[in-house]
Amino acid sequence: MDSALHIDHLTKSYGGTPAVDGLSLDVKRGEIFGLIGPNGAGKTTTVECAVGLRAPDVGTIRMLGLDPQAQGRRLRQRIGVQLQDAALPARLTVREAAALFAALYDNPADPERLLATWGLADQRDTAFADLSGGQQQRLFITLALINTPDLVVLDEISTGLDPEARRATRDLIRSIRERGTSVVLVTHFMDEAEALCDRVAMLVDGRLIALDTPARLIETHAPAARVQFTAPPDFEAGTLDALEAVTRIERSNGRITAYGRGPLLARVAQHLDAHGVTPPDLTHRPPTLDDVFSALAGSGPDDAA
Amino acid sequence: MRALWTMTWTEAKLFMREPAAVFFTLAFPLLLLLVFGMIFGNAPLGDSAFGSVDRSVPGYIAIMIGALSLIGVPITLATYREKGVLRRFRVTPMPTGLVLAAHGLVALVMVLIGTGLVVGTGVVLFDLRLPASPVGVLAATVLGCVSFLAVGFLLGGTLPTARTAQAVGMALFFPMLFLSGAALPRLLFPDLLRQISLFFPLTHVVTLIQNVWMGTGWNMVALGVLAALLLTSATGAIALFRWT
Image (cartoon, rainbow over the protein chains, first blue to last red):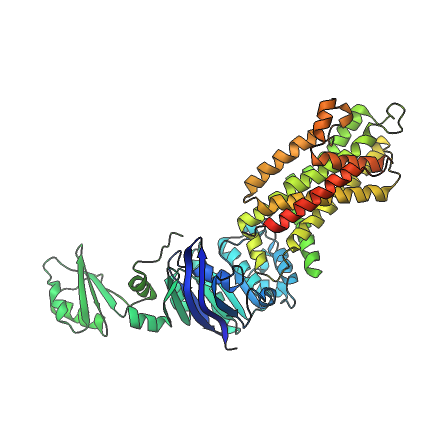
């Protein structure tokens, strides 16, 4: 078996409304695979079906070659999962949590060593409820790795973390993959998906609307970079249109945005300088997965959740 | 087995970190024993060989069983469901019943420890008359505890939040505390109240333990009620248990 996770025509409805609708995808061994999409796109339902928490209405799922429904316990020996909205007993200490989860598996790693690896050695005797959000997430990742899994599923692992902790979490996820473990990462942070994932599947309304490497998704769906600056009122923005690199101009509140490809920044800067305009706030932003998301999903992801 | 042992030991430690649970299970019955023992003493009543404390101790055991099964276990399980602890356990290879087995074992051991404390204190301070058949009392205690734990699993398995579990648990426990003969001997009850008390399952736990303790044998009505309670609650708990 080549694939870490194989999903074929998965459909799952709740009360007649399909949460996932005919989804097919293939996660290769050893890759970090991102599942992105707005809230309610069916990401969590997909993950719950994949790890055997829910039975598909239609379709087949093979994780590490195993059927999550019929071979659930065998499968869960070999995978690590951190679900959204999961928690541990409030008064359980870090050390106790690691020992407890180690006892649930046939071949656990040494829990104390794992805690040290993930920087929780100093929190060993701290109760779960007294950990910071970042420490709790680190503990969850530690517990998801306690059986040295072949595949880990991390659902919204960075939600609710401050930027510092999010950065740290990214490094942790990279180091999981370096051990050869496949990672399925559910996230609504586009920057996280772009920075971490080898390939990304975008779901909208339970359907797969795009699946590729972040770079190719950007190249295909949102290739335009943008240059932004504030121009004096008498500046003729239309003259930018003549530049080959520029494809589109937007003007609002005195701020001008030029979209385009190729040497966009150099050409625009040259043009402005030639016209005696030297804005101090000239910025360049390359296209990101966020732009792909906006182009395909119609709006930005809902960060409120 | 390793999983069950670790889970049970972990839950036992967590239990000891809950002041309310420890108070109701271990301290409250002891307090009742001290207060009522000091008030009424343990002189043999009438022509019976048993005094007030001798008759009350089975009730104190029933209080521990009721408090743990109806309040402690349901609140813990509902909290686990509400917070997503059950959800986290579910994605491990742990067998489904392991959490319940661990909670059941902890509750049972706590009841036995509490019983030991009450009996020990009763013997030292009030010259408690030990049962003719300690094994029989132990068996009656375990049976009463297991049948009530099944109710606790049914409540904890179905009630959605810790708040509802607390409300339901209290509503079930407190009437039984006073009307089942657990805290106040049913001997003192008027006839009507004594009839009413038969509708409370905890009454039958008290009767079962008390009769074996005082050497009058196994009360078949109590045995039947508790067996039926065990059967229906366990079936319901298995059929209706919700992980999320």
